[in-house]
Image 1: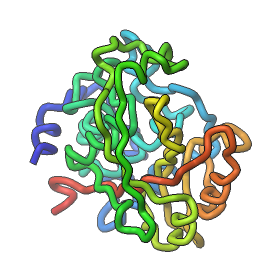
Image 2: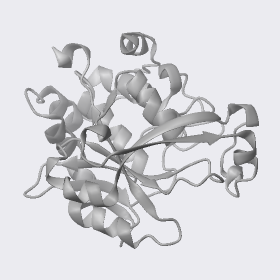
Image 3: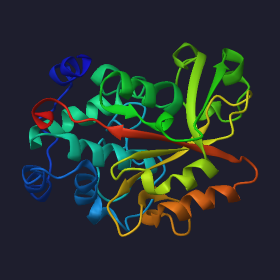
Image 4: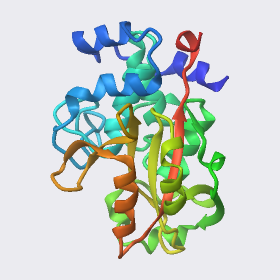
Length: 272
């Protein structure tokens, strides 16, 4: 399986370590479910501020640190929680982090980062074995085809936010399966704890992106999403999942089409 190669070749810098409390939590995973692990590792992050583009490579094009615990944006919070939750021991945390964030598990460069959710992060992590797409298992799921061209990128007003060469920008056909907002609301109690929930906006032909947010479901009295969000105060916080899905109906300028639901996959020693 490709994931075995990724783990073996990831740039596991021994200088990038976990804290003693994180190490103890990893060693106590035992038979905890993925939802319980994600909650365990992110409980102390609730209330921390949202920081746009909080993580980087610690040098080069994006000098923000590769690891920090004082702020998160929506994706880096998910990547860090997954790295801690999927690692079978403390040493493996950075290997998992590298496998999730970077194409082929490394190198850790701005150019090699999985910047784009629909074209890189989601399909790459599914192909590498870190994730499984369960969106199509729910009633009402829709599959659509879209095409992104060089012109799509060059005409996009926010193209300048990415310091990437034109030939590095992903183009071509994409198949997207999503659960419309109303269908997600109807199935909210069937979405498992530990799911990674991507918010998909309406897919417009003139925009190269369509995903604008991601969160994760954690154990709770009712289905709960934990996310680094700009809703209300900019911070990591918990919301009832149904409330969040209803909130998506308020988006007007760029309506929400629905959600994409992935489940993290254990590997190697943890799978055993």
